Image (cartoon, rainbow, N blue to C red; front, side, top):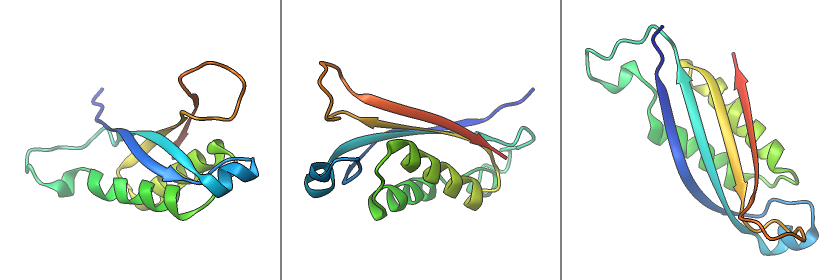
Length: 121
């Protein structure tokens, strides 16, 4: 079985997501990781971008969603990113989106709060 995976790792954005009013007002840094699983039958012999997914275009999609909308839940942000990728990139059969919130307003000592979800056709 052939499998092609493209990963966009450590995409950093400043955004205003969160439930609390302070998060909407002040904003914070987030990181996003995206994993794309492509059609099994892809052939890259032609060595052109038409045989794959343009990851710079995928980055633009992620950036547009993540900085263009305000979400209370990072779960919803991840879901909308996944939906947009599946809608606009036909070669993507499955997408996983991880949203990392390093400064979540919770009373614990930790690196981050993270949500990861997977959507497929």
